[in-house]
Amino acid sequence: MAKISFICATKIQHNMKFFIDTANLAQIKEANDLGILDGVTTNPSLMAKEGIKGDAAVMQHYKDICALVDGDVSAEVIATDYEGMIKEGEALAALHKNIVVKIPMIKDGIKAIKYFSGKGIKTNCTLVFSAGQAILAAKAGATYISPFVGRLDDISFDGMELIAQISHIFSVQGYETEILAASIRNPMHIVKSAEMGADIITSPLASILALLKHPLTDSGLAQFLADHQKLNA
Ligand code: G3P
Image 1 (cartoon, protein in one colour):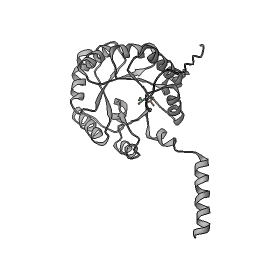
Image 2 (tube, protein in one colour):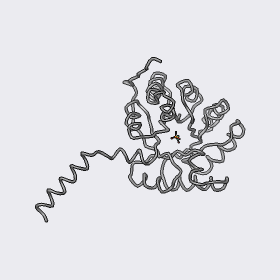
Image 3 (cartoon, protein in one colour):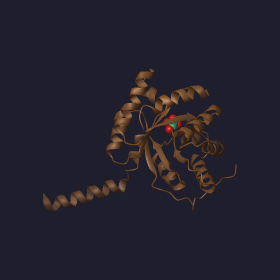
């Protein structure tokens, strides 16, 4: 397959936002305390990882996350039929003003995104793996689309090329839907997402913290402190 590279020279970007991709309250708090957190994304697997089960507990957990972070919080519907998604999505949206209804990239999902878009309820179209899917979700009025870069890399497709391709298409077409690079697995995914024009990354805490690390920072700081100590011991 020919390698496609798109450089988005024309897109006017604001600062890329940072969301954390977890339902773990301690990790959400740690990222928020850094002062760089703009929002949270969750999914049914991440909720299950925290042992959150039952509708009441799930709803309460979303409220707890919203109380911790002043930013968008994606909460995913479980239903896969149109009526079910509308019912669940409306209940989720009623929990807090910052809830974004996360909807899978399926036929009824596109209809549901269109419905919520008309109601002024924010949506995040999840499980996006192609530019065609991204265009359809944008056309339906999704607030965010979530291309899963790590899962594409897992099957030998370049996740970052997809971010670049969607970024180019949205610039050319003037779609306002924001590109939320998801399934981030390492700090270079974050750096590359910024380079390719993602509007937002959603990442596990470990990959965000890994951005801090450089051996020359560590050795340089150790040397500064040692030199200071020599004169001030
Ligand atoms: O945001 C999507 C994310 O939770 C999926 O990540 O690592 O399971 O592919 P991963």
